[in-house]
Image (cartoon, rainbow, N blue to C red; front, side):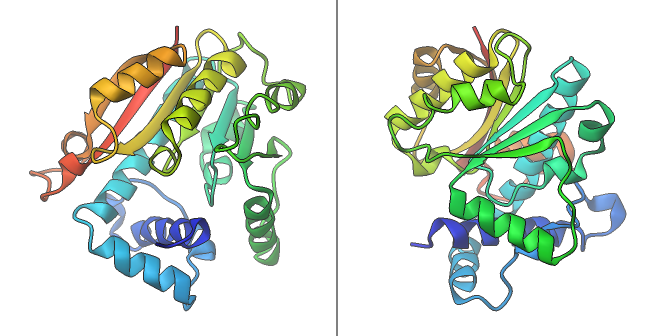
Length: 256
């Protein structure tokens, strides 16, 4: 199985391919994704080949990206001034969503220190300056105590409980155990406080709506929306989706 870096590079390739589509067909713009695609890297090539065999895989990457972009924009419009990206990988929303800079939103990216270092080195080599509102926090979401230790540093960065925040958990929960998923949901409820929301995607082979609702409840969150990617395809694109959309889900939840 591909490691985390190879998987992140494969996702970056899917996002980079969006810019090659005609302007009227693009669901989003991510001009930086090509920097992380790992062209010619053997591990990345293997991951891309493996994902290409999964029905609807590329479609779900572009659809989930657009869905979560829209969630961030909607929450900023509702007054959120913090975005917390859990398992950030090669996420570029802090650099490509104009609403973030326009409204003075702070972005807190959480991932392994090695992943932060790779991402920062790649951007630096490409001459991309990091904005002052972007900060990096080191964390292994699978470790039992890691998120508990993050609440303080997150608050120190001006993400205050009760002020409302939007959390993103993209391409993560299918790779961590149920207890880690529950801890992550609890962290969202505690760190963001009332009014906070989280958007996350999942695979139907691992979770169903009932099991997710149970984990959300245990974590102090209420479901807001839960869709399969076929429904998201119908929201954003004309015609019927190709087979496989029911293999993937995406959801939004809010703090009780």
